[in-house]
Every structure is written in C-alpha cells, then in structure tokens.
Length: 567
Image (cartoon, rainbow, N blue to C red):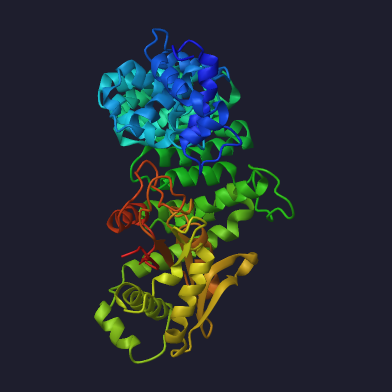
C-alpha cells in the first residue's frame, strides 16, 4: 500500500479522507475520518501510499476518465488524485506545480462541478481550472477529452456543456467546436443540439450558421422527427423572411408543429444578445397558421396534465397577438388590422379586435405631448389621483420614499427583508414575505390619499396579483420578482401584462424587482442572467440588463428596482 500499488485499498482510503462515504461526519477533520477507517497507526502509511501512487506511469488521461464516466464507472485513481491535491493544499503547496497531465486528469475527476458533498472538490476545481484553462490549446484539448465521449455515446446530459456554451472564458473555442460537433455527431439529443447551435449562432459569422441550417433542411439531414422539428424552428428564427415557402409548407403539415415555432423563441433567447422576441411578421404568421387549429380553451383543472396541451397552445397564440398589439410600429398596426378581418383567426376574432383597439389607443398616447414630471408632481401634491397615470405616479413616489428610508434611515429598515439560515448566515426572505413588508411600509402613506393595498389580490380568471392598489374604481397591479426568480426576464410582459389588460387597470402597472446583490458562489438566491448575458453582480449591471430586455415595453409599465442589498 505504501508503495502505491494497492489502488483498490487507496481508493477507499482516499474517499474516507475526502468524506465521500454515506456515513462520513463532515464535522470531523479529514485525518480523523481516515483514522476511523484504517486506525491511527495506518494513517501515515495511507498518506504515503496516496502520495507515492501519483508517481506511477499509468495515471489515466482525462479522456480515459471521462470514458469510464460514460460507462457509469469511477476509476480507482480518481479520488486518489483529488485526495493528493487536497493533501497538497493542506500543506500550503500550490497546485500550479502539478504536471499538466495530472492537473487535467484530476480536473476530469471533478466531473465539471458534479456535487460530491465532500470537503474539497468544489474549491479544488476552481484552482485546477485556473491551471488548465490558462492556455487556449490546453483548454480546448480538455474540453474535447471530457465532452466527446459523451457526444459519441449520444448522452442525454453532458456535464459541462452548459458552462462552455454560456461562460465567457470559453468564447474563443466554443463556436468552432460546436460547429464541428454538430457535423460529426448526427445522433445528438435535441437539447444538446440546441445548446451547440446557439453557440454557432453567437460565435460564427451569419452565413456559416445560415448555411448549416439550410443544408440540414434542403438535404433532409436528420435522424428523427424531433431533430427535423428542431431544424425548422431554427430556420424560423434565423431566416424567416427568406424561407417563407418552406415554412408555410411545414406549418401546414401538422398542427402539432406549433411547438417547433414556440421552441424558436427559446432558441432566440439563448442565441442572440438583446433578443426581444418574434418580429411582427413572425407573430402574424403563427396566428394565421394555427389560430383555427388551436381555438381558445379553459385552463386544465385538477392535477398537472403535462406539457404542450391545448391550453398551452391557446396561451402561446394569445401572446403572439399581445406582442403584435404591443408593437407600436406601422407594420404591426397593419398586420393586426388585417387579422381583425381574416377568417383564419376563428374564435380569436373578438380578442384580436380588443387588442387592435388597445393598440390604437396606445399609438395615440405615444403621439401626445406628456406633461413634465415636475408638473405631474404639482398636480399630485394637491390631492388624490384623478386617473391611472396619477395613481401610478403616487405609487412610484411612495416606492422611492421607501427606498430612501431603507438605505438612509438610522433604524435598520433593511433588516426585515433578511433572515438567518440554518448555519446562521444571512439570506434574503422569500418574495411573499418581502411583499407583505413592502405593503405594510407603503400603507400608511397611501391611506392618506384613500388608496388601498391588497396583497395576493384575485383578478379576473382567478389570476392572483402580488400587490394590487385601488382608488375608487381605478386599480393598479404590482408584480414582484426576487432577483433569483427564473421568470424575472419575462414576467413584465407575461404576468404583469395579463393583469394590465384587466378593464380597471387601464393598461397601467409596476414591475418591482427585489435586489439583494451578489451573495457569493453557488448561492441559490443569486441573481440570474438574461439569455446569454452573464449574471449581474451589481445594481447597475441589473438595471442595464432590465433596460436591454424591456426597452420596448409599454410606457404604461414602470420598472422599479428596490435595493435591499446589505450596506
């Protein structure tokens, strides 16, 4: 064992040192865990055996290790290498002294961040990546060695693929690799194919990905119906105007192909910076082709019934109408007007007429000369709101006043929005708890003007609004999202948009984002990025992303970021 020959024994000892056994006590020191397995007298021999084994000539390569993972196996050497690095760190030795082969092999054993629930692997992986990814050629070789065995085996999940597609440090290699892999591995899982194509779109010239998509469609290069649908969704996204004939023929084949066009939207978010959704012509196309095939329907009742239901289709088509109506361009106005008279829209006709009327009012509003903020404030300070714009302005003023109290008061007004976790670390409260604190803080100021607040208010169709304010018959909804919420980049148009279409809201609303700041690596309360944009780590970065995402939103929607970060 001390000579590094008994890998089977050293494998068990290394796992004990790392704390990877089910009964490991992570509160114990690593040496105590090791002693519990082999006895105090054997600990020095175990450490010597781990150190000696690293000098062997048969240490597996990163590709060999990955091939074993694809087969569902772990090689003996893997925890031994990780334990060796952990021991080196404990002795204040730097990992940069490792041979590149050993660094790559040990990093491969970390499996691109899979959770081992041990003491060392996550932090060690960061140090190893700094070594391996410092050189472009070495980085590309490692990525190939740890990805291609999974691609060859047509794996459903490929560890690390999400990272290399989305992280900036791989932008110099991922475009060409993705293009090569799409051509080399025809049996790709569609989810992996989408990730790779989004990289080609982002990092290669336009003509390259357009030629790739066109080649697949023209030569019918696909191995399944699912792949075929994916390539048509990509064609709809990348070359809608130049491929009308093909897309019309495809759309007419089967009403179920609606889902391929829905996938185009998701692919757009993953592929293009500042992607704001379908064009007016694309929205018109979908409504014309599928409205009669998927008529309006009631939401499913009872238990979850799966995806791609009649209700999902109805809501997707309805949102295309809503997006067309929210577009203030002359082109969108002409297309929506055409839909009001088109027989293909079936039972959506009344909804389209209502959307068209709303678009006409909004277009008229945009051409009005609006009073200055100073003039509005003068009117508001005189008394209660006279219209929805007044009510919205009062609420925005109240939120600004609340922000000032939270940031600048001497009474620690920020504390109610934070809680202690199990390990006594500070953690943001959940959205609903924060909502109630906000409502409580605003209420005294609003009640002076006879404005009422209603948390979790029920709207038409049993929809619930986070915070609803009303004055007489006027209402104004506030949709609240914490920085970690997966819908933060869509809810201003989807959820808040639904509430704004209610008669009593007049189209007005406020989208309130709760900002707690960057909370450290792997914190599930961290903010999330939009599309291929990286996670915002500062308030200014979040505001910039919000501007990019919602710069085309209705003037009647106000966005407010409440800064609840620790000073």
